[in-house]
Length: 389
Image 1: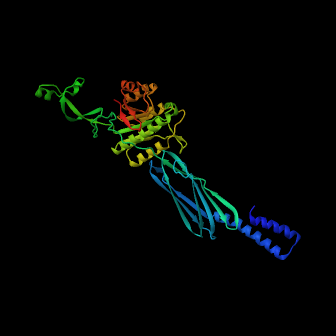
Image 2 (image 1 turned 180 degrees about the horizontal axis):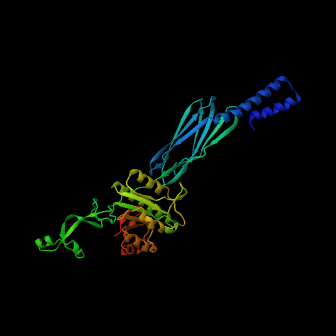
Image 3 (image 1 turned 180 degrees about the vertical axis):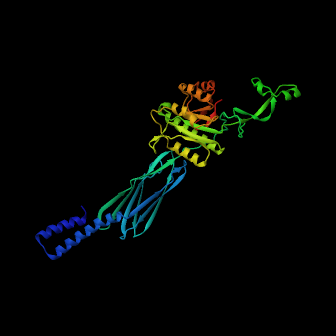
């Protein structure tokens, strides 16, 4: 009970026993003041508008500026407003921002603060709360926003060594020294024969002139279209370092997509992870080479969360819907699952080239992958994809 209400009740009791005009006038004035103080913030609250502006996507360790614009369109001044904004702990050391302002009729106030991204994920700013009060009464009116603002922190991107993804398309304009596939239409030179060289690459004219066997060196090619398939179910990542392995897999996927897109190659993404923004599985993205496409890939990798049970082979079998003949399917997971090998062999026979990047490979995973004709890579501690010797 406020002081004014207490005085009003006392005077009402006094007026019951002594109805003097002065006491009656005082009681009516006090009641009128409290009625006005009660109506004032409620009427003014209907004339307040606010808008939050925030970046939808923020890179790791990049500061982001948040702007809150408060507009008052009423005719009576507002003595004070208390504005509070809840902030996720991962974005700021302050869990809540607080401002106290006053507004004149038609005035607009701009509030700013900065967030600092620390860990990838989807975060929600707010809710924003506005408390409107009057000077003569402590009965504040609370306004709470209904829709919070999402902010996505994308994964870190690490530099990758010179990878040579296998390409099923034999003719390409892209050359790479370490590629595992050669373009027979682009000859680079000759070299002496070494055991294991294919007889089809023998240069007989040069061999006859030099008096020793010579082999044609061909310009290697790399994949022009790649689909990154990220395994992100909880069952695929086990042990005490499961969370770290998942994060390294996300960094590897983001780094590979960035590296390929920087070389003007088309990249796509599919995963069995969960997207909290859409409340569904991560929607597949067919390969494309536009910068906006890379931003969308990084945003989805920033939001991705693991699901407990989700069939990953469905995504692998459907890869031929997103990849043209000769494209590369890069599978990023913790360890090689032998149950996939038959399906991967079927995809390879359909004209796709398969590569795997393993965050926690078993003792025989690399050898098993090579036995089935798969190109195998390892994901190091930083999340970089490195060739396995």
